[in-house]
Length: 246
Length: 246
DNA sequence: CGAATAGTGTCTCTCAGACATTATATG
DNA sequence: CATATAATGTCTGAGAGACACTATTCG
Image (cartoon, rainbow over all chains, first blue to last red; front, side, top):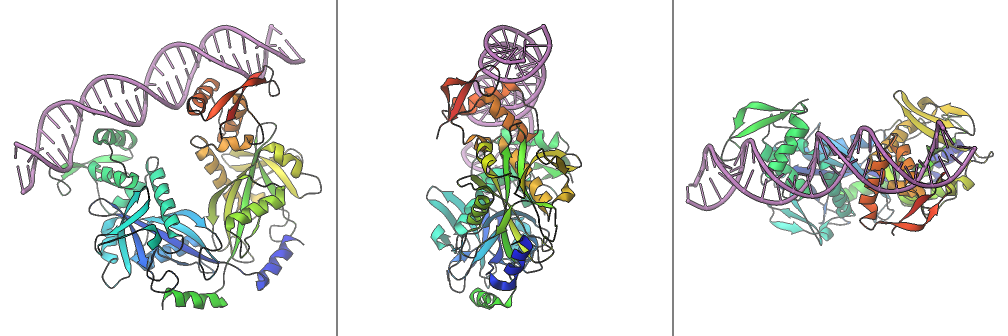
């Protein structure tokens, strides 16, 4: 049998096809400079009452990435956000009802943009501060005042979140990921940027070394520039403002 | 409508589901120390006569990774090979006949194992030496004596191959990828390992620095050990043999 | 004042890249 | 002999980590 014949046979609904979803880890950094993740409380079975990352089915004429963008728009109202494919989760028992293969994406959203859109009381969506402990994930909602453990998450979403966190931390040093959280601002201070790096890496960084390295990597190479004005918004004493070029 | 209701509606074949395939980049390093890729010539339409990476549909009760393993076994007869998920390609027009979402994997196979299984004349499978040039990929089969360009590849497989190559090169320095090509051997020489690194990175490396760095990273940390015997198989003057621990 | 942030400087150790040197085997 | 590989050594500059120091502003 040729592959064409095989495909035709397959195509005639002789073989069951899996459903494919695009699920999104929506990350942001809150006012206290903690990494936050958007979760949605499930209203129905299975995993009723548990929390899940937003997502939905990929349309038959829609690219997987477009489906992720659409879901992000439906959940947060946002377009044009940085989106990166994370991993595809394809175990047959991920969903107890049916076969679902999930292509997971990560979205990095500046908090200023996200705040106005999500998190109203009527919504089942909420932002959770992330802390990784030796025993596993902890997700804390300041607004609702409770903490989720891994077992409070639906499906294999704890695994997806862990994978996303590890990818974020891994790419932090050699990519421009961190700046995605500052996209809405016309400029930023180095302390601001340092706090983002600390939130993602989970480590306290050395102030002097961080500034030195930023200047080496971005200012000296012309990828960032020092602005005239100083910012007093962020801290007690006014700090220099920088802006990424391009 | 709750998500459960939505799922039930969806499940009742009201919505068309995409087909999902697992496609595999089977890499090996040949006797001339070049990076090679396994391709299969398509016998039917579309892309009849063009070359494609092996792959096939994911069974409804089969994990995506298991499907990749099964396909690898069917094409090469091999089990227990290093397999890593690369990326999921999900544009709606990837396949002109039907909606196909492809989860691409990379397999790194020692040439000693692969040689006996694939590449006989009756087969439509062949190994191609990879060279990346400014104008794009070149794939050369020594046995068949011709060179493929990107347009000789089926579907979006040129894009998949490029992504795989870039992932391989990117992970080379901070992972143990290269050793996968030596898995069948009980030991290896440093020159052998250096040639693998050069094949993957496409760059000539400094002998002295490579040896120094290997000792720092693997020998001094106890992750590799120097064996008593020396190897004369590989080169003119006998060289020290090393073995990875674990 | 103390606490938090801004900003700079310094010291050491490691590492990476470039390159030289000598030995050993083959043909 | 030339050539290919084996194995080690040296020099330099860049980079990472640890830490010290001073200035500014707020309460």
